[in-house]
Image 1 (cartoon, rainbow, N blue to C red):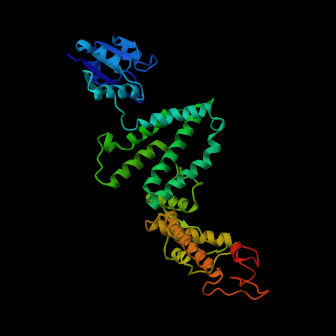
Image 2 (cartoon, rainbow, N blue to C red; image 1 turned 180 degrees about the horizontal axis):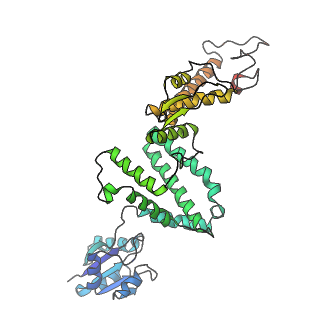
Image 3 (cartoon, rainbow, N blue to C red; image 1 turned 90 degrees about the vertical axis):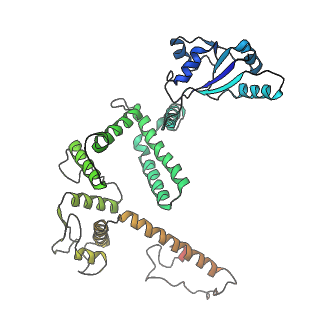
Length: 392
């Protein structure tokens, strides 16, 4: 009769004592329960449940001998899974000279989805306490970094780089956990990452009555209606502009305001250009009419006075309103165009480098004292008059 060795594994991401029923059966039916780590988080709960746990660290041969006469020994494994013990048992079994007991690996608890978030919180807590840089950071000081991380995430999403998206999501998650950990140290209004998570869970449940309640939503439009209705009850705002962050990129800001106005059914006049003096261009719910399109396309009425910034601002406003009215996010559209412009710059740089290489086709030495041609009188906006093209 060879006996039985049970290697019981658990996860630190689940509260100690929450074990599977097969694990409790094995523990209660064992002749001996061993654990090498007296500080193992499961030990106090096992003893409280009436399981006698011995603090012992037998080697493979001693453990096999302990199973003589058919005894069952349960080993409560450490976090690393006891590799020294399992390697020793494998060598004994492979030798063929030892009568081995039956060996069983029994997971006593499993990680649930999201369990690794516990690791993030624990690591961040230790860094906050022990890192000289992290321990003095404030949310105000990290705000700029948080914004950069979101921009980097959006860039990788639009580029379709799945590996990079995964990494950037981690960086955004870090910002959330970092700000929450900083908030724990606030002397007046502290809160924790659990408070943050609890708040968003409550909001999601409240705004999805068709999932967690008796409401019905059969289309995405129905879902949006539920969301907006619940949000209006929560916020009790007096204006559709409330809650729209003014610090966001200007094109996105215009689109957001226009969308809010359209959802509210407002007939919003588009402000006239500075110094124009004419009637404002009107549209329903933030949508522009043909006059606004004309401004956005560079035609129509004379350009308004007030300086270049005012003129271009009026034109950009009209373009952003046109984009939103046609279901186009102006910020995304401009980023896409900017990427194309960047590629054009790279091509132009390559062509310029090839043309300036000695011996390349079309490269001719400039006459002594000759000035480089200027794209505009007195030079372009990217450099002083007479500056080399590479410096502009």
